[in-house]
Length: 440
Image (cartoon, rainbow, N blue to C red; front, side):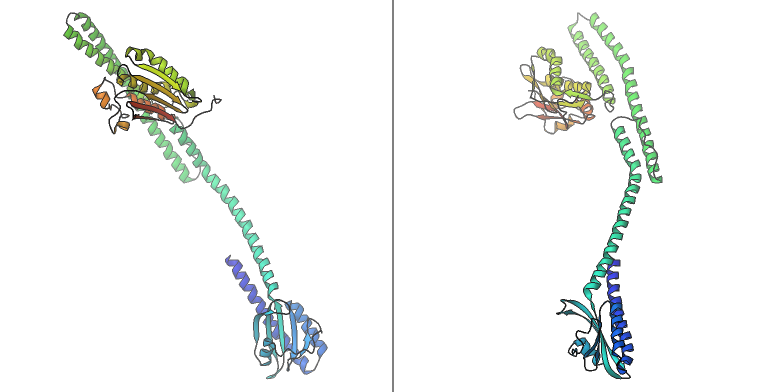
C-alpha cells in the first residue's frame, strides 16, 4: 500500500514535470519560428510535441490567436486569449492547473509557458493532457503491484503453512502420546524430534512419565504387598477366633465377643481387598466394550435379590425404551453398580423398596433410607469417610463409594448421590455419550 501511494504520487508528479519541460522546449523552439514566420515548421513542432506528451499542444501569438495546433487546423485563427492559462502565459507567467473541460467532459492538466523574444512576450504554448488517462495508467500500475503482492502473499502463506505444519507435527505427536498415557498406557513415550526446544520438551515429558510410572508402580506394588502380607495374619487370627469360639460354646458372653471379633476380622479383610482394588483403579486393565445399561441393571438386581429378600426389602428393576449402550468395561460397571445397590440395601429399612432404573446413558439406584446430611453429597466419596447414616448404621469400610467413582471416572462417567424430595437417596452413574443400539 505505501508503494502504491508512492507510485501514484510519483507518476502524477512525473506527468506534471514532463508537461512543463515539453512546454518549455516548445516555447524555446517556437520563438525563432514565430520571429521568422515559419508556420509549417511550427505545426510540425507542435505535432511532434503532442505525440511526445500524449496530449494536445497549441501555440498562440501575442494576441492569443491560435496559430498552431497538434490536434489539426480546425481551430486555427480562434482566439484563446480568454483562457486563464493562456492569459497567464501572455502576461509572462508560467501556469499549470487541473481543470474540468466542458467541451471534452473530463479533467485536464493544463500547462502554459510564455514564448519570449528577449524580454518581450510574442506568444504562448499550452499543453493539455487528460488526467483520466494518467489515472488509468496509475491504476494499471497499482493493479500490477496488487497482483505481485497477492502472489508474494500466497507464496508466503504456502511456505508458512508448510513450516507451521513441520513445527506442529512433533507437538501433535506429543499430544497424542499424552492422551494415551492419560488413558492408562504408562509405557508410551513421546518421540524426541523437531526443534531443539521441542526435543527438550519431549525429553522432559518422557522423564516425567518415567517418574510417574515408577511412582504408580511402586504404589500399587506396596498396596499389593501390604494386602498380601495382611491376609496371612488375618487368616490366622480368624482361625484362632473360630477355635476359641468352638471351645467357649458354653459361655454366651464370650461367644458374643468372639462373634464381634470375627465380624471385625471380616471387615478388615474386606477393607484389604477394597484397598487393593482401589490402588489399581487408575489403569484400564479390562477392555472397553458396548454395555447395555438395561441388561446391566437387570443383572445387578438378579445378583442382589436374595440378599434383599433376607433383609425384607423389595428389589426391583425398571428400564425405559431405548436405554442404549455405553462404552465401558462390564466388570467395572457391575462393581460400581453393586456398591450402590449394596449401600441402598444396607441403609433401607425392612419393608421398604429399592429400585434400579436404567435410562439412556444413565443408571439410578433409589432407596428409602435416611438419606444424606446436608453437605455430604461429595464428602461421602472421600476415602474412609462414612456419612451420618454410616456412622449410626451398619459397619462399613468407607471405601465402596470412592471405588465406584474411580472405576467409572476412567470411562468418562460421573457418579453422584443426592437426597430425594420424597425421602431416601438417589445414587446415579451418568455417561456423557451413548452408543446406538447397532454399535457393537
